[in-house]
Structure formats: structure tokens, C-alpha cells
Length: 390
Length: 83
Image 1 (cartoon, rainbow over the protein chains, first blue to last red):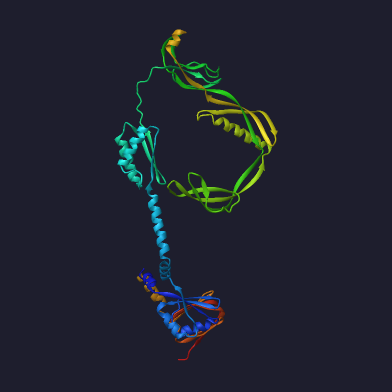
Image 2 (image 1 turned 90 degrees about the vertical axis):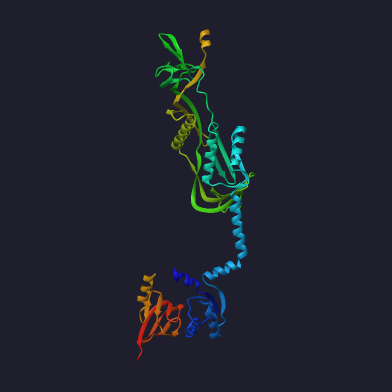
């Protein structure tokens, strides 16, 4: 280590002289006893790395050559460059410090909640704890502490609070605590069918199941009754609850173009810069790629304006055409997806069958019959007065 | 650092060193550079002279005791001086 430090303190310089006969110069240098630590040969010219203190000696002994100082070597070269460009370097450092400083300032605190009262409450609490406009950003630990303090102060009003940093803006999301009355209203209800179908599964939570498996029910039929009967006599009325799954049927129309395009990345990637504000997006450099897909990565955000580094991947678009079997498979998949969008996790498609198939104007048009196992139960309230009236 | 220093002392505790590589020639403890051109190199050591024939000789480092020459070595002749 000491050697390295000592080496860096030795002041080397590069000197230049013009010559056609390198060997003659070297022979002459060897006679003077001057150490040459590196030599670079250029066209009709030689660069020699020598000690700075030897430079005068070289000029003195080798009069026939015109030696000129080319540059400093090693760390001294760096020092010289820093000295030369000191104003620019200071300006850049100052600029970076300013950017870091400004990007750590909060210009807006957005408290997001529908109730004005809650918004005001949280805003005043945040201001008290130091989260307000034109102040420095807090670190993660401080934010966590502030969140905890507010939630502990209002346990009956606030359920959850999150402070998100979005550039120079704090977004505060709040969930209000709603303490519900445990006394429930006395209401009576049936679970009725909202669609016609064949019953496949019944899960009763409350009430009495009114239908059997594999039986057909029409829309409006009572599936789970709220009336608890014994020997045809109503003993009690409850709000029936449960799920009744039935096989129901849909006809789905699907139209699929036979021509399609495949976009593949070539592996060529270019960087670009993008600026985004409230008005729109602006690409800073001209894009050199004709067909591309773009990935954006945020660099920094300043006063609501965002700068992104874009990665542009070159792509090739290949035009293809489905053969009939492929098109049929794709169309059935589309039909499945179309039905699946409406279904919940516990519901599923049982079977599909093509009713009608035609090809027109490079399009396959399908009519697909789909049977689905779906929860058809919906709660319908009734009153005891109604029953008495009946 | 002492290990490195001792190792260096051991390696350099020689009257002379002549190392020939594929395209380099290293000489340690030479006394005088007598001849140098693209194809020929003649150096004087304390008790002998070395004459090297080759191609594209270029000196890349030269101190009062060491010399590093770039080029292709084809022939080396050793001549002991009469004492």
C-alpha cells in the first residue's frame, strides 16, 4: 500500500518529440542515463514517459530533438483536468446537489378520503407531526412512527392509514373505522332462483332447502326458504342464506379473424428519454427503430413532471393465417373466456358445443352452446304481513 | 508486504536476468546498450555481451538497469568478454 502511495507521488510526465529514427533516439537516451518508464511509437513521433525532474536534463542533453511536454501522467493528469474544468465540475456537482435537495422536498400532501371531516382531521394531525407542504421528506421509520401515532390517537375513527411517496407528493390513503351495530334488524328472506336451470349443488347456511338435486327450477322459484316448518305449520321465519349451484346454458357468438400478427423481439435494444406532464408525453431523442416495443423506467419526478428512461426493443411483425382447426380452437377458447369473465371462483364451465360455424370475409363466426355450473340463488326479502294477507 | 519485499529481493538478487518471451525480451542489470535497430540489438553486461537478432524491435521501457523490448526474437548470441 505504501508503495502504491509512493508511486502515485512520483511525478511522471509524457513528452513528445518528432523523429524518424527511433533507435537512434533510444541509444542517445540510454547514454544520458535517463529512465524511460514507457514509450509509445506514433507516426514520425515518439511519446516518452519520464520523471518530471528529468525533463530539463533531456532537453539539455538531446539538443537535436525538440521535446515538448504532452501531458501529465497518472493522478497528475487527473489533477490537471480537474483544474482545467473546475467550473464545469463545480456546476455539475452543485446541480446534482440541487436536484437531490429539491427531489426531497414535499410540494403537496394529498389526503384521499370521501369524507371532508376525516380529510381535515388527518391533515391537521399530519401537519402537527411534520408532514406538510414545502418540508423535507421523512424517512421510512419516521413515516411508520407518524402512522402509528395517528392510528393510536383515533382508534375509533381510523381503521388503516397509508402514506405513499409519489415523487414530490405524499398520497395519504385512509380507511375509516365503521363500528357497526351488532343488533341486526329482524328481516325475513328466501333464496330464489334468478335463472332457470337444473340443480347440481345446494349449500344451505340458514333456512330450509326447498329443491332437490337434478330437479329443474324456473326463474323466481324459492330455492332455500326462510320459513321453518314442522308438519306443514310455520314455526319460525329466518333470513335464508346459502348457495345453490345449477347447470344453466348460454349461447355465445364469437367472431375470429383468420389473419393475425406475431410480434417478436430481435434482441436489438436502444435507450431513449421521455418526459411526461399533465398535457402529454414527449420523446426527447428521435427513435432509431422502426418497429418497437417500449419499457419505461422512471428516473425522477419534479413538480409533477416525470422523466423516464425508455428501453426500446426492436420487433419484427410476422403476418400469419390460422388454418381451420387452429381457428376453431382459438374461437372456442375465446368463447370460454367470454363466459369465464362472468363467473366467480366457485363456478365453472361444464361443456361446450358448436351449434353453427361459418367462414366469411376471412373471419370465422361461431355460435357456441355452453353449459355452466353457476350460483343462481339471490336473496329476496318478505314480510310477515304479506304472508298474513295471503 | 515483507513477504513481497523478500520475494522481490530473492528474484532480483542475481548478476543478470535475460528473459525471452514470444514477443518480448526482458533484460536486467545490463551495463550498456551498444546497438539498437529494428532487427538487431546488442547489449553489454558486466562479463559478457548479448547480440539478439529478430524483427520489429521496439523499446517499451528503459531504465539504467532494466530494459523491456517488444519484438520477435529469432536468434540470441552470447559472447563472454575476456577479463
